[in-house]
Length: 87
Image (tube, rainbow, N blue to C red; front, side, top):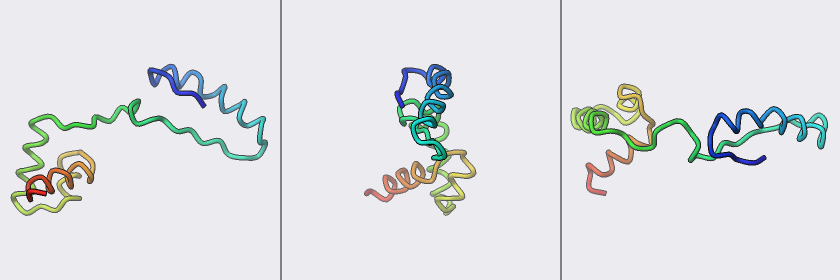
């Protein structure tokens, strides 16, 4: 598989790649990997979301619940919690 500079170009090429790869090993599943730099999920929170995470953590809300409330990932909230603890 090759990666492209946009998700749309990758999406156009993926069916052809799947067909080609399927011919090489018939009966074997084909898995695709999209490099993280092409993901549509933002890696950094904006100031409002960051403040909401900090406020929820300061109020005693857990990491998983805070992530669910704010709409971000557990790892992001855990990183902010570690920063708040000074580590």
